[in-house]
Image (cartoon, rainbow, N blue to C red; front, top):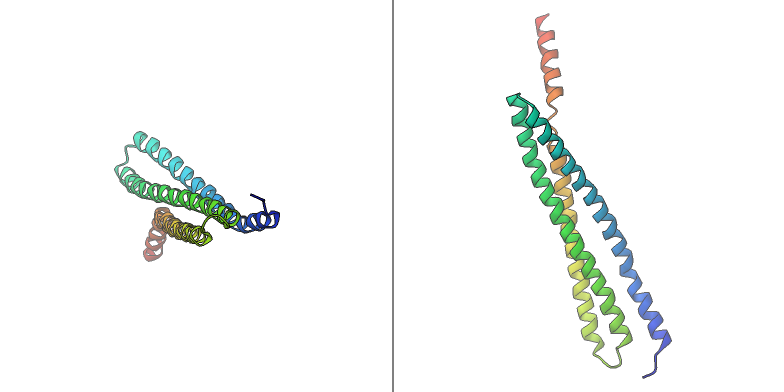
Length: 164
């Protein structure tokens, strides 16, 4: 069996395109892992402060925040799982494209192309699902802010201005 160098070169070129997608997936995994680390750190700080506090209002607000942090952490974990699955599917796509191009003479090239198309499509669906999880987690993070000190300052200002 003679090896066709131009066919191998074309196969490598074809397989390199999804590698750029893998780079984006790796970047997203890093970003979400960083957010997950911050969620965990914030949860630990809240737990420590709650155990030292006797203020029932503070404990109640902290419990509410811990609930949000738990949901955000779960979403971040799902997001990382989807991104990891996406990475695996894109890597599978690269392998299928390479094998399909190099072994086209002996094996049905159409079947390899179809398998590569399906794995790439599933990878994209997984990536979009991860982006949706990331968006929801980010929205939850901003909803967590209750601006409690700002509300107290506004009420104090209102009571001072109404006294005059």
